[in-house]
Length: 95
Image (cartoon, rainbow, N blue to C red; front, side, top):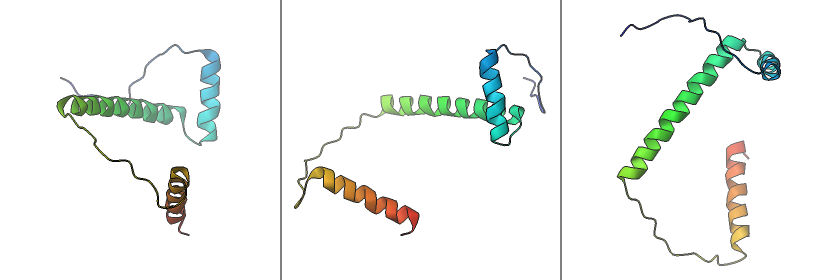
């Protein structure tokens, strides 16, 4: 197997309106279209690889969650969840 290094030139056919939108998008991000497209391809392949690994793990391991519902001492479950979320947001923002 021969390993290619550097860049490969290719031709693709893509909808013209989509291409123009992509050009504006890459320009707005301050990136060259080539590098942005490369990043997007890498990300797509990584996501696909992770999905396959997670599927494999899920098939290999039978995980069963067993828990008893918890009733809050005061207020409602929604208030408890909202309070926890707000507390986490404050910690993340450094407040």
